[in-house]
Length: 215
Image (cartoon, rainbow, N blue to C red; front, side, top):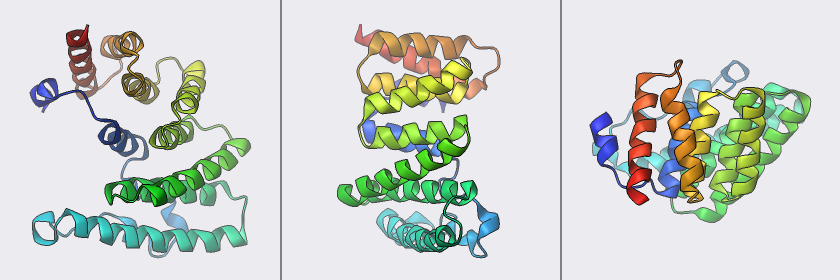
């Protein structure tokens, strides 16, 4: 897999941030499961793409996430300030946004991302959480609001300059903004850190090589 990374062309914007969302949120659909009896429904379908096709899988997952969104609306009606409910709502919207983009429905995707931003902001007003700031940054990035996306990452890094997730997101963001010098510095930093998984280190090295080819 590492050798394949080295051979890839520069990462395209949307593909890059789908990857970011997967890294940050994990299995995008998984969230505050203890609130929902039907939480298992948000997991990706086990149906093989060879049987139903990728587009069918996206449609199936969209329906599941829309149903989950409605369930969270009910939860917010009962307790509108519950941080766990707000977090779950934000993650469902972030998931929906990514799915709608994959379904070539940019308008609905942007609407979902905007809702996600609002929920993340409400949670962060109550409590600081670096992982939620990373997710908020991803939402901004999907919306192509790069300045706000970078500002959220810098807030996380001000608290912990060696936060691997934040550094990785920042490296990708700077590439998206074609700030090759800044991106190179970030990837070199990631590759030199002691406490980093080998795959992440190799990914950072592959980005260093790719950027150096440009200059």
